[in-house]
Length: 284
Image (tube, rainbow, N blue to C red; front, side, top):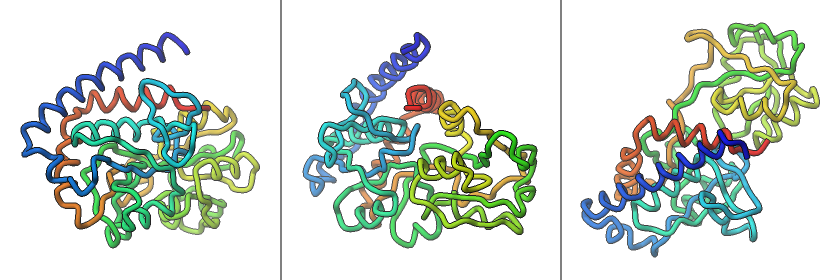
């Protein structure tokens, strides 16, 4: 671990201590949140992929910041989403339980009561709103494209420069649906995860993949031959939402109110530290 990373982790831990203290105080002043949420039986069960670094990933050793994964013995969840899950659970006075799930199983699991919240870098979209409710955003995002070094699309300045390209996204996400904004694109059948997308690009099975720009440094650190293409306003993708939100059931009105309160306790500076720390700590 580099000194810089250690300092970032230390800063995050200090920020977490301060945030938890604020959360405990706020909880005491907000009409006893735990009493409103007694049906949760003292736990906040959160679903995520644990395979979407730096938002969330899986580790094999316990640390001061990661959380055991309930359904994967000996494994721990870490990342930006995990830290938000900790903040929210602490604010609510509930024990945090992390459940690892495939992306396309998260919404059904939420509505079936297997989990109580989705904290997995999920966007609030019109299609998802038909099934679940969403908090205010806890992280903003911009989309770009990733190609291999030497690609004929490496000098692109607009998404329309990818006309004729074979472009790949992630199934059931905006990373897939936005591809249709490119005129004349060869929209490949989406795959189930970001690691699958990266593997296909490595293998040359596609010309480009769609990515969250803020996640790209971690992808390029692990794949030095990748190149990120970003776009000026008006030349890039139009997104259905500003960023990541917490997914909740429609009948959990009290929980939604309290989750939004918890999110509001964290200012932008603290959010930036959390994101930078997760990005620097994410596995290659």
